[in-house]
Image 1 (cartoon, rainbow, N blue to C red):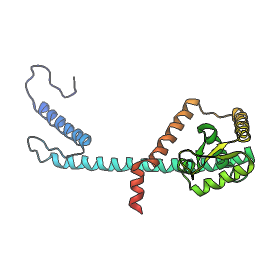
Image 2 (image 1 turned 30 degrees about the horizontal axis):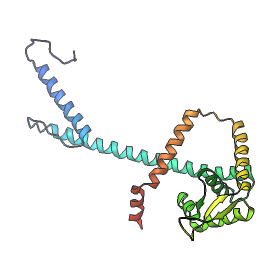
Image 3 (image 1 turned 120 degrees about the horizontal axis):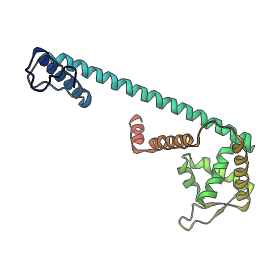
Image 4 (image 1 turned 60 degrees about the horizontal axis):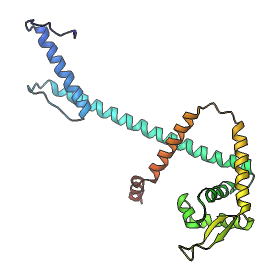
Length: 221
């Protein structure tokens, strides 16, 4: 039984009346917090209006503070992702020793190995970077004999880029090298947490690929 509830068959008392007023006020405040809309009492008690207004303002402050925390969390996530990106680029150069463009070259080789022949515009759209940037990387790989051009039945002027046997061997060697080093790297993070992290990264990436993001950017131009 509630502390202020009357027993069955008891006559109404001043304490019971005060309890009902307290419950009415509590319900009014809860309604405001849940609906974010001003709700008045049926009996027109003017004393409820200051209480409702205070609760409404408290709700707005809490919502603003929550939004601020979410923005700060997103900015922290972006900063860490940017730092990780640069660290992975450096790690790739240290591991594969292919110079400044090693990350871009590796990505092209691996995409061709995983997805098959592609055109330069297709590869540029998937990153996304300029077509000219991808063309420069592809030309370098072609000079080294790692990729070759082939006719494209779907487009006469946009040739397909494919891996050569040499390029295939290069990808397999990179995979072995990375597997060997990463397999010896001690990381005190459970596999399930890494998978959750990958899911968060995927969701944030998709957010920046969404129509919502494109509309926001278009408004700033």
